[in-house]
Length: 370
Image 1 (cartoon, rainbow, N blue to C red):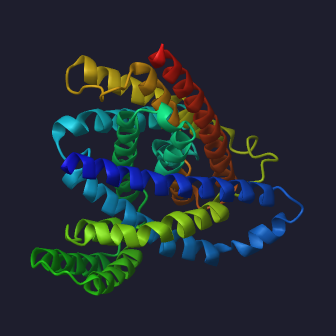
Image 2: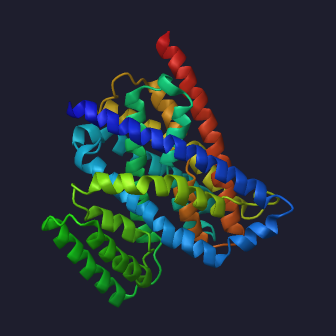
């Protein structure tokens, strides 16, 4: 019964992510068309600096809260709960983080584009699940769970990178306040407090303190999630999921995916090439190589029904960066030609990686059937 309940929970989660992924894709396309149309000035006016603050710092904190809840669930009772289950997706994610960053650095070294090394590290879980949904039952359940766990492990790495490497000068007083609020949240969890308004109120204070501290405000969402009691976790996930998947993420895509392609690859070419190659080649190479090493060294085993052809295709799907990649690009460059170049690399690299991954998984299904 526990296994059956876990599978049903995953299938419900995947169905929501798939629908959200399709809406995310539609908003990304709309942003691209709008920003390359005669009405592009209206796009720039609408998504001004103030609008970006509300979307990227305020609303995306709820996205990171949901990410944190998903991470906690996976660590406590999901694919990352036991070392044996977690070994393959965690090691694959590690390979898919290191190789893209190194490839990006090969193009940018210590030049002006160097801060963007974190951009091609991320995998977009909504887009990946949406892409797998196009193949339906031809994708084994074990592969879907593997890729979902990989994307969540990827998110853990991205959160750590944002917190450590994309932080401005620190305000010690604000950090002390944030630490005090965190202590209160941990105490509330330890005392088995079951009232969501208590965590919401303390979470708001935590968010403001983190915002003032110089650490990016969205990190408060992940920190808050780690203090939520297990009894409240499913309820909060269910409450947040529709708002994040069908509201916040599509709005983020609409506000951040707009890039005028005319000259985007000519300006700051090392940045666009570093991001594109990191996602398109670094991700599949890193994921496949790390998976092969983990299995060869008997640190992990392939999931039931999953072949190396499936892992190969999954590695390319891992190159769909988008949401987290766009987010890190904004932190790395703020604005200007390098941000434009990074966005172009993200969009082209993610699209190409997704198409290749789908084609490979389609062929893998045919080979497995044969």
